[in-house]
Length: 283
Length: 312
Image (cartoon, rainbow over all chains, first blue to last red; front, side):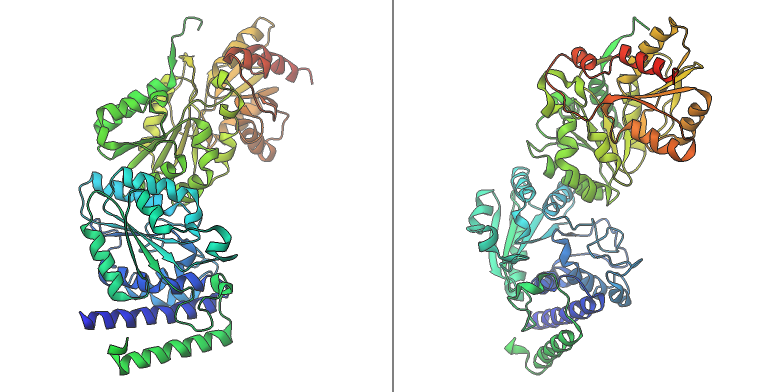
């Protein structure tokens, strides 16, 4: 178990480095929410979900849907590391005629349904969950939402319906980093009491530290055991996590690091990796 | 023609859905609290497991349709045209069409003939909204029989479809040709003026042709049931063969069949085209036939427009 967790931490760190490199090459994009959801995505793609990167359409696969489509760099990095496509594709992110579009495109191996317009993803995931139930399949659906995103009314329509239809194969995750483009969530359009909101909509809720691998794995394991209702994991996270000058800085919601910033960020992440190699148990 | 049977197109839709449901267990149907009116209730009764009532929450319904389709389901989504298009335009564009999902939107209660419910419920821009979205196919059937054909065709052809139905009973149109998506046809052959129509306006066009016959004007009536992809060659051919051209639709003249015809002819065979449709205004409450008259959609109005094309 311990070894597995250390490996997942290293994987997360690798994903962070890829996010920085890919965004810096692209010259635009969204680092903040990609970095805040890195552990969530790492746990899903390298421990929790079952899939076959050599056969992305394998019918028995678990489904993942990125409702907050702008954070696709974290997914692209995970998909590349999982073998869905060549790592080299990452360096053409957002470039003309490239595979990796600025927001997820359904033609990318490993992407089920494209996204980008906020608030629709939980509905898309609900539809997948309903299909799985109809076909009496045991695969599960995971839907990663942003916290600013859930200000969309469409999310709450989906929340109401998922509980009504008892879609217990659906697990939502809110990356609760408490920032949106214009500033602090609670200043722009408050979400609190967030856990109560989901509970009152009929969901099983689980709060955890969204950067703590053990806590996340526990949350996903618990979600699998919940019957008759969907589960939402409210993952408390830090926007820009892992890069000192990006943490809690709203400017990096939607700005790519320049060359100098990239070098500093990569140096920091390499330092973390070195420490991990040296002293696993500290992490 | 005068003793044509009057049938609800939505009844034909409901019955066809049940047939498709029996033939294919992957057919699922979604509605937003209007299943009695849209007739999806017929499917719900026979296949309760494959019917999902989303309540008054169309955005969720439309995006969920994309999710269901991504897992291999053939998804029919129904509500009134107003709520099946304008209300959920972003979900249709970004979740359904951008992902090329196998979702068939079959909307009822379109057009001015929704009648007494008034302007808020008279979808007169729906075709314009959806026509602009890449990959969307749009069919406006003229009667109950063509509705059945259109629904089956939408089931068989992968990808997003919009089928536009009305509220009222409509006459069964005689002399229809075999239905094929994107293939327009002539119902009545004439020489002087061609009236290009769709939906309930096909019947009005046929009545207008009768009126004009008494004035010694020979009229062709064409059924352009597929607005997108529109049958370009057919339209050019009609334009070449007739002095006058009239396009009539129960829709705003902006963005619907008239626009589609103008777009084709402006580049392929420039010609003056006379529109019969809603003139960029909102409707109001009233009996359907009163509204048809008030807003210039009646057979008489079409006949006047058609006669006018020969005077220029």
